[in-house]
Length: 293
Image 1: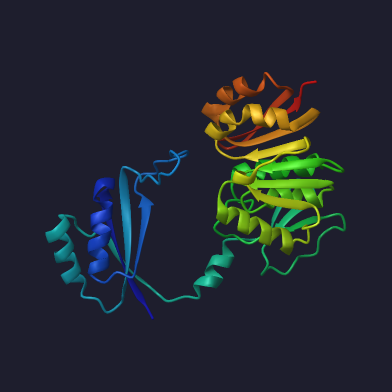
Image 2: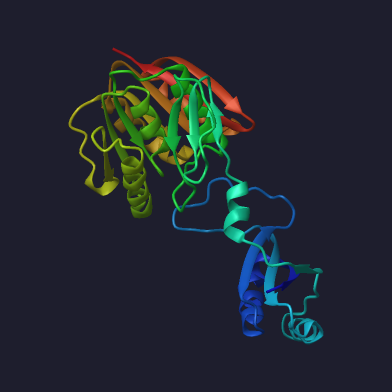
């Protein structure tokens, strides 16, 4: 079956009404897109904000009466169709897979999706099996890449590791495969906890990694490496907890920090850590340091 996509540009205050009208007119799918490349990096907790100017893409069956929809949406919402296009039916699952290929981090760490037949790799390669899903963390985002690159260059062999804000569990799994002795993976999102547990099993690391919800957080033993790939505000709020959870000379690995937020995070952590270093990919930054004695 073929499809027709109609696109509209609206203010964010109009988005809900326009979407409801389009669904009432027979749209089977509504997607929102940033109209002017206006980034939203860290929304308040519990909020899902839109951009000031939103492009709405509505998918209809190809036999719709386009003129009737155009007239109706203009009459009800006073907006015009921005563009219209025909879409051929495709095997969308296969199209999706094309966007997620094996990725290499550092010298020997790889992330492979389950459907990808593993290419011939050097014998010392470390492979994390990971499919994209609802939880954050597949290696494609710069913040995760920064952490994976660090772990490859600094394998946590025989170290106890905490992954705070574990998402899919990709960093905990990588640390386990790089030699960590035990890991505690923590997240405040129930979906992430489920995803992490599944990925841990798929990577045969269930004997090393314990995954818990942050509501059940009890840190009984200090760690030698604490990883937190989360947002800046939680990193600042959790500084005392993180400091108390790391052994003397243990390592802190923080990511998810924008360039303009680096100094604010450093101010919170320099009380507890030394040998602090900052690395970046594009606008995203990683901070590492050692726990003071």
